Length: 349
Image 1 (tube, rainbow, N blue to C red):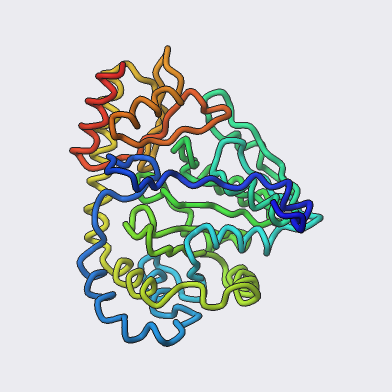
Image 2 (image 1 turned 90 degrees about the vertical axis):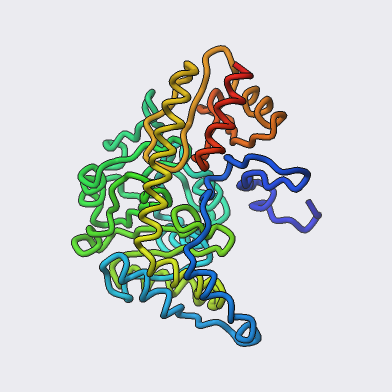
């Protein structure tokens, strides 16, 4: 670091993205990307954009927001488009946490939550998952903090029901509950219908996973119009033109093709089952995931060891330290990618 770095910068332990290696072609099952292409309408939508790139994009992303709202059965005033869900989450930390209001989230979850707390100088109350890696709902009932829960939970894939989430939301009327639904389309229940009932619920979603648009960086918030107004205040104080013209066009087209993405998410669920059955035959243990990834381990092997041996064979998975250090996180790929992974694991084990 330079000699000008602030004390806060020196103390940061930044988020580490998944590998995007360029040295050779891998079976890439490490960053929970979609194995399928975006819908055909996306290609049509972005094809004629080049001429418009000399102009600023619509800061309100009105067409994209309307398409998302129609898709979810809410009003455009309940939606704000962002540059990926990471920006939406950062805006939420800025809007609803301060020196008096801490953020509360699990110890095993999306790695950006503690980073955002540190960046924005927010106190973090980190709640341990139980021995089976489940969220203890009692840790969040009447907490008096801004609550951030990924549902399904990042890294574990375990989901709470809407009824369980509602207990948390209803018991914290004086604080915002942020529900990160990045993986909800792969088998979990969405809390979107609850925004009409609770003014303290903010849902953050992304088109990176089930929308197959990770490279376009499209996220969004869904909530009560006053909460969305709060997030807009942060956005217009930070990055007004946050979602580019090409991303807006791609996102709008994707949001309007529900049938295509329903078919593709069903394929992910089918491949998820194939992966789990294969892991079971290999004697591996794994958590009950409702996402497009599986957290798995094998007795007698360290997680880092399995990660390294798979990488040598040209298969990338993800490894984390801490409580899940014995595990590897495997993205659900195409049928052929799942078969390749299982074949490689069989050789290693």
